[in-house]
Length: 377
Ligand SMILES: [Zn+2]
Image (cartoon, rainbow, N blue to C red; front, side, top):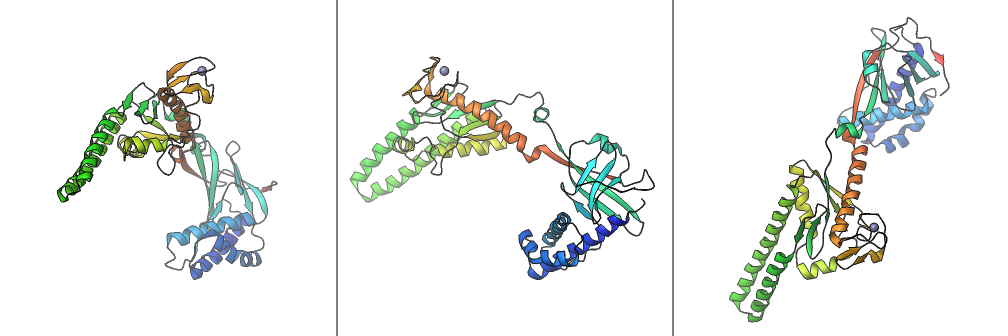
């Protein structure tokens, strides 16, 4: 280009601000942005009063990152006149091939060369960097565009299959696809262990004590094996997402039937089953989602009506639409619906869906004069 003197001056001041922060960070051994700000703000303002404060900030961020990169191991002398811009300090207009930038002379508009990339990548323009090559007297700008791919595109034609899983005492797990894993066998075996243990405790002899220890070990392994078997069966089902109710810190359901678990199933905990499913699902590239357990057992999975009295023991009977179903199954269907919406909510906010792409374009290559014109900021 046609090199712009205001931009060059901005680049110089930006570099100076960076250097003050770099020196301070190095001597104080910190790259913490707040500390850098407190320690250098005044000096930067006094020495470089014409640098806009938003650029003072991006200069500080730039310096902080360099300090972090070098792990504060060596002094950094910034040579380049690269200026970093963020959402507040630049605006890119792809249709008119212009960019407005904050400079020491206020906000100025510059033409940028046309580039096929501009057409290819449309999205939100989040960051920009202006590179100034003083030797070749050239400037160019790189604009970063954030493309938010639509969730629908991502899951392309592939229906995401979600299953809701309700955990309980009589049924270890009830799945919204009508599968029940009951605790009958688990309870029987546990009962047998309990009986044998009591007998041995009664005997009180040394050999009984040894046997007791042995028995406890065997019981633990049995519970472990049961959890492995159930979790394997569940994750191998043709579902992509397994939705559970979130447990509270003690591993119990927030709804509050935790005491029952402990009493009836001894050391068996729904928390372990959930963990097994979680890591097995991960191996298969499937997801586990947790939802808020509030009202899942009181809400009708057919009409959505919520009432405490909808549930009578193991039977769910909707007082509104008179739909009737096994109570755990009804809950699992609510969990499925909530799980599905939670899955898509996480998907749409997830970083993995965003991709940053950069495009660079020479500034002012199309016109001989950048004809900076002021625009309000
Ligand atoms: Zn209903």
